[in-house]
Length: 285
Ligand SMILES: C[S@@+](CC[C@H](N)C(=O)[O-])C[C@H]1O[C@@H](n2cnc3c(N)ncnc32)[C@H](O)[C@@H]1O
Image (cartoon, rainbow, N blue to C red; front, side, top):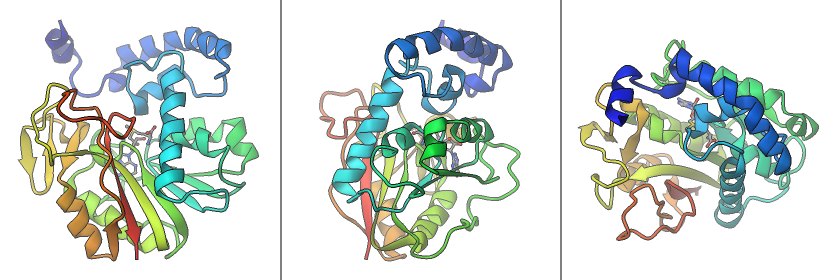
């Protein structure tokens, strides 16, 4: 059955107008469930599924829970506090920003993304308006999220100053980007971090193997390993060494051992990240 559905609806589910209409029809029911859980402020189901997947998305509980857990990692491993100036690259519809609204001071958070629907949802969110959180749309090309984008990710210069941020983080973004693009982003992240600032990245690390019951990465090009031959950006993995050697050229070092995610769905790798993906932290010297 799964194979048949994949054949009829190849690529990414929400890009298909029929599936997207079905998601929109589920919005009112999702809202009622969220209301009963005190989560009415979250974006609509049909928006959340675009950046956070369909699995266990209904009702908003997982969206909320993982946002909180990721914010905790930023506090514990990236020294995030109320005074930290934070940049989130690929913020989607604000999963972590909701949790950060209780942690950082007004005006201390900037989220950027290339996906207009997600950013529009952030801009319409009252709590973000109250906190004066800023959301920037950047028209960078990505085959999955912004196929007609006018700027190339492998040469893109972010519109932020050198040494501007205490913390920069990306959740499930390099899992959709190829290695030339990621190399440029790592250089830019180092440029924008203050000395002593920390970058948190969630990723699929290939170091423990590429074939797992959860997901496999059988294809390989340059430094990236990928799952889907016709849409590489659907799921991309890297070796830790790629991050280490690329960041080293720009003065940033691994600041703690990686936290392992449960995406492998294999009991031989114990999850330490409380999240699906692996998490790495790099500090600018
Ligand atoms: C799986 S979603 C994750 C969204 C959000 N970080 C979260 O965890 O809820 C991936 C996000 O990365 C963004 N993205 C993809 N390529 C990007 C790029 N080159 N620059 C910035 N964001 C990008 C997408 O638009 C999308 O919002």
